[in-house]
Image (cartoon, rainbow, N blue to C red; front, side, top):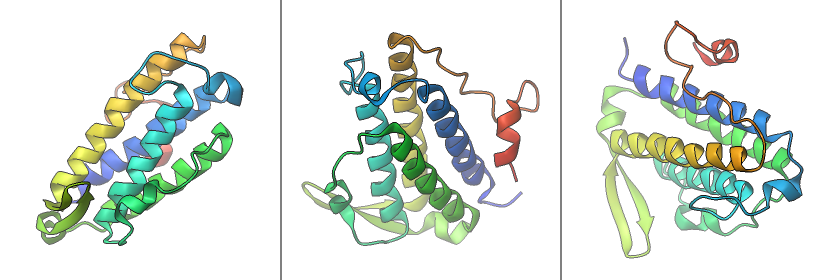
Length: 173
């Protein structure tokens, strides 16, 4: 097993979970997705946009893209369909990054631009944080979907062969 394997599997799981969540959300209109819903962010759309924006921020840091906090200087996407496409593109970039990981890259450091100034972090730690962030906010989106009258999808049927969601198989290498 390569050093990249657990990170790659988490990136694949992330892409599958996002696609599964967006499929469930596709039953909502854009107005419903923007309606107030309980959570850290005021609506499902705002939660999903936050997940996407933070994915951009950390992927930029991991790839030394140089954008830093400027990734947040954009209009929030109001269309769930468009946001789903953008998220899928971000997920594909993260999978590609993780597929190329080596033990050396995992121990390298990257700069993250914070309001107080730059902070140096290890690549492995940035990835673990990013995956945890995604899970954290998808859990909130799960509750928001339920509050909007849409059955939230099961999002933990990816890694085990037992009860693996059929849609997960397409993401596993």
